[in-house]
Image: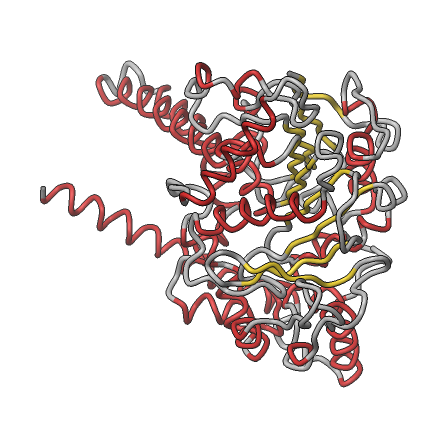
Length: 489
């Protein structure tokens, strides 16, 4: 018992010590880069205010063809979203899930790509809980999954006409945290969508399995060295080499350890050096020399509405009567950027991607109804993957049970290929595929070349008259010739 206590204590001390090391490391990098002591000019502040009004004033269009809407969850909290439609149609539905440190506004560039079928499909870009104009949650655990599943089902009911439910399909596109959460939805609530498209974030069960595999292999090799150090001296270096991908991944994700430090450290990191951390993420997203990068516009997209925008309301409410407004928790974040950053990083602390998900009875009933509808012989709805069959469901923990297309920027800055991509095909079901974009990085939906590839993929299956194709990669190669097929199932 004592040894177990000391092991846990050592693990906790090591975890927080590494987090504190990275906290000081980031601050040092901010000072070295010269951003730490920079102050916004009056012109910068004006541009920030203009961008916030443009994106978050509820009486205005956030970007061409889109309006603001709200959905009230069963728990009474609101999710804010923007959409190009206000009522039902026979068109397909596409729901976009963003990541950190973004909001629904991160999709603004992608929405302008001609390949996006904005005139032929209903598009919904939602703010994750605690981001943008959506209410804050007390904890960002599996309640986030519950909320997103409920939201997608509600969007199906709102936007897919009852007269043509079988011809219209539902698609989910996720990036970063939207991708990690999307993998869980595709695994544990696959019937909510016909296809998932995921970009640049780990399938957590797969990444953890890779970690355990490397640790077990390194441990076995090290035991050989330990048993006979002189005879098996080479096993020491072999065990360390085996752990190299895991060590590299740990270094790449040092910021996660920072986000698990006490609140005073995390909140300060969010605003230190004139928001150097968030600004740095934006610079990586657009790349050096980008003509599209607007500092204040990107900051306004990340931090959501300000106090002035929280005074605005939609021209017409979701119920067609009373106008909608942002909730009190959104105003609280608007007044305190530190509080806003604390909520954004809550996903890294509270377990939305890995804690066991016990679904509510209401959600179970909704999912059962969708499964029943999809199983009808005359249903043209969701194409059922072979792993949807319970007989095969537990072959791999976390296996994805809906057709999934993964499009991955190989120059990924946070998720190494060895830990987060290699072997992912074993978790995917029938009609799934993985495409590598060799010149692209983490922000696939933002960088011009990769977002064109993503838009082409989305348009190829979500347009009104879309037809099945042998591989999605072949379509992507028309606009990104170096794109490579990794897995096709």
